[in-house]
Length: 298
Figure (spheres, helix red, strand yellow):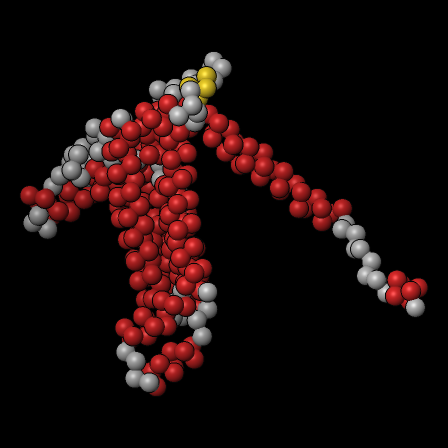
C-alpha cells in the first residue's frame, strides 16, 4: 500500500527554460531601469550632490529646507490644485463623453476618434500649438475679437492670474479622450439586463446612473484614479514648454521645480527630495482610495 500511495504522489513539474527566460528577463530589466534608480533616488534625497563630486550625506536637511522654501510651498499648492482641477475635470468630462458615445450608432466612431486623437500627439507638440494659440495675436484672441469680445483679449501665458489655468487647458484637452476610452470599456461590461429591470421598475435615467452605472464602475474608477493621479503628478512637458513654471512661479509644479532644481541649479540632492515628496503624495492618494474601496467591497 505504501508503494501504491507513493506512486500516486504528484510529480513536481519542471518549468521550461523558455518560460523562465520570459519571466526573469523582464523582471531583471524592471529591477535595473525602475527599482534600482528609485532606491538611488531615495538615498540621494538625504545627500547634497551637484552631479559631479561625491554625494555628501546631510540627513533630513533637504526636507527641513522645504519647510522654509516659498517656491516649494507654491509648487505644492499648484500641484494639489492641478490634481483637483485636471483630475476632476478629466474624470467628469471623460465619463460624460463615454456616456454619450457608448452606443454603437452611425457617426459615433468619428467622434470617439476625434476625442482620442490628441492622446497620440506629443505633449511638447501639443504645447507648441497651444502656445501659438495663446499669443496676443493668436487664434484665441482673434476669435474673441471677431465675436465682439475684444475686451476679453489677454496675454494668457504672461499673466500670473491666468498662466496656471491656461496651461491646464491643453493638458485637459489631451487627457479627456484617454479617460473616455477607459470608461467606455467599463460601460460595455455592465449587463444590459440591469437597466431593463430598472426601466420596468420605473427608474429614471438619473436613478439608473446613480444606482447601476456608478456602482458597476468601481473597478474602472480605481484605474482612472490611478492614471489621473500619476499623470497629474508627473505633468511636466506641457507646463515646461508653455511657461517653464512662470511667470514668477505662478504655474510652478513640483515636477517642474524638481527639474529646474536638479538640472539647472545642479542641486540633485534637493531635487531627489522633491521626487520623494511627489512619490509619497501619489502613493498616499492612491492607497487611501484603494483601502476605502476594499473596505466597501467587504
